[in-house]
Length: 436
Image (cartoon, rainbow, N blue to C red; front, top):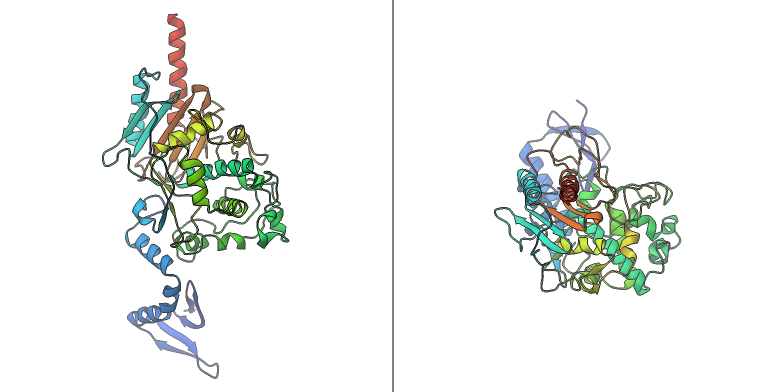
């Protein structure tokens, strides 16, 4: 049987092959091929010896990847405690919005969405209307102070931060080419990508991997588990002309965060803490570090309390205001939700539509899916892997947060809760009008 190369990330030995029959195949000093029987435990020993130097230089990758695999985690179920080291954001006292003295949402409607969230193994469901809490529910094992991983909902926070940097004058315009801020790409065709292109996920850069299967040779896995979050970004090739195609790409967001750091001269984590988290009086939160003192992962994973995302939703709803505080520049939130030229379902790091409307049922509970489009065309979403949601529904003056730590038993319909609220409130208003 034909021998197959024996290889491992970071190690290559083209002259040493292992056949399917269990023979080692090599060449002597004269180049003549030979085969010798090899026992499996000797192969394991050889692997350990050869990889000794590799594990020393890639300690964080080995540590994270080993714990990830041994514990049977996936990108959604890895607990908050797994994300080490992490950086504490500057934060406020963690005040929450007031509870509505006179609720405006019919109790039966709240009960229906609560029941759906519970049936889908939710961690938390929170509903805010007119700036007041009308529902704050946590399921057993969780409470208001339990942290979760919002995953890519974090991207919308970066979209907010860019607006602040522009208002400060650190970034001149969304139409600035990023080569103005990245010395490495100043004379590179990739430097012509604009900040707007990155905000719209239309920079034209290659994906770091075809998928995010947790295999150690995946570029995405090596980046997310390793000790260099930024380096791989600058190695990505340009595969489409900037501004011509929408392609959701985690590393276009990471690149945008790197541009912001270069423009402001401040780490992303400090900028977010000082300019968003603390002014909004949000509670304790952490960001995932590549290694102590290093960069944070910018495209995901602001480990935080679900209730704090109600205030972040209100920043979109109320044009950057939270109570009497203007946290985002006036007009920036409105600009964020304008449709991208490349796809009208996306704005500046925020979704303007369901992620995938396919009808029927998806093949697994781990597939993004919606039974239908949103029942109103003004619904906005922060979205995160594992069905983390912030729905902003402007015509209802409403923000809804759903958080989760485990996969649901049945497929999650991302349109069910917002559409039930939209139709239920319309029915309630019609009933009031009929009575009057």
